[in-house]
Amino acid sequence: MTTSADLTIGTAVDWRFAATVGQRLARPGPPSSDYTRRQAITELTSSAAKAEPLVRDVTGLATEGAIPAARVVDRGEWVGAAAESMRLMMNGTEKPRGFLTGRITGAQTGAVLAFVSSGILGQYDPFAADREGCLLLVYPNVIAVERQLRIAPADFRLWVCLHEVTHRVQFTANRWLADYMSQGLALLTRDAGEDVGQVAGRLAEYVRNRGVGTPDADGSSPGILGVVRAVQSEPQRQALDQLLVLGTLLEGHADHVMDAVGPMAVPSVALIRRRFDERRQRKQPPLQRLMRALLGLDAKLIQYTRGKAFVDHVVGRVGMERFNTVWSGPDTLPLPAEIEDPQRWIDRVL
Image 1 (spheres, rainbow, N blue to C red):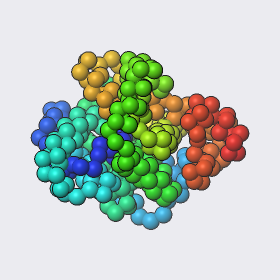
Image 2: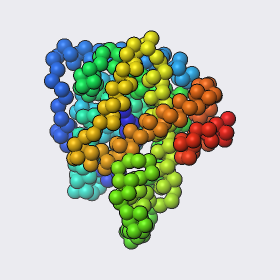
Image 3: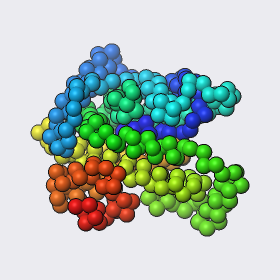
Image 4: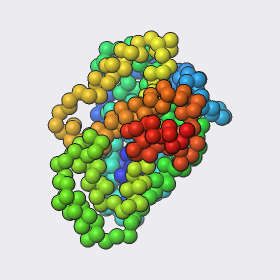
C-alpha cells in the first residue's frame, strides 16, 4: 500500500524505457485459473465501491463529484501506470535529452518498479488523470497474500479496499494535500546548486560523526535515511521531514479506518489484522532485506505503526470530528515530535 510519491527517483529518466524494463522484469503472479482471476477482479471492483460510504461514515470527510471506479490491474499494468504517474509528477518528458543517461536511469527505475510490483496491494495516485486521481488495485498480489495468510478472500479484499479508498477520500476531501506533496517533492528533487565537493564534505562529516552502520532514529535499516539527509541542503531536509510526517499521518489514518469499520462489514477483521501484522514483521532473506532497506520500505512499515498509534490516541481522546482539524492545512499537520507524542499536537492545535 503506497503512493507514487514513495517511489520518486529522479527527473533524468526515460520513463517509457523504465516501464518496458519493469514490465519485462516483473515476476508473474501466483498460478490462478481464469475463473479465479475474473472473480478477484470483479470482487475488488465492487469492494472499492462498497468501501467508499463506509470510509466516509467513519472519517466524516466529505467528497464531491462522481467517484470513478477503481482500476484492477496485474503487475505489469501497475508498472506501466506507476512509471507514467512518476513522469507526470516529475514534469518529465518521454525521452530526456541525454539518451544514454536516460536509458541507464530508466533501466534502474524499471528494476525498482519490478521489485515493488510483486508486493504492492493497492495504490491511490493523486497525480494521475490531470490530478483527478486514480485508485489502482493489484489483484495477483491480493490473491497471493490471502492464500498465504489463509483468510477469507471476500473479507480481505474489502479490508484492502478500505485502506486504499481512505487515501482517495483523504486527497479528494482535502485538495490542498496534493499540492503540498508536490511542492515538497519538487524541492527534494531540485538541483541545490552546490558542487560535488560540498555534498561529499557533508557525507564525510556524517560518516565520521556517526557511521553508516548506526540504525536511524526511526528504526529503519542502518543509516539509509541518515545518508540521504547528509547530502541534502537544509531546505531539502525540511521538505523530507514534512513528507515523512505527512506519509506517516496518511498511512496511520488509513490503518485506523481499516479497523474502525468493524466486524459488521469485515467479519474476520481481527484475524486479518493479526495475521497481516505478523506477515509485516516476518524476517526475510538477506537480499530482499537489503532491497527493502535501499528502497525505504522498512521505514514505510514503521510509518504504519507510528501513524496508527497517533491517530488512535487522538481519536480516542477527542473524537474523529475534532481529529479532522488535522486536515485544515499545513500548519495543523503534526510536527515530527508530535507524531511520537500525540498530546503535544492536541495541546498545540486543539
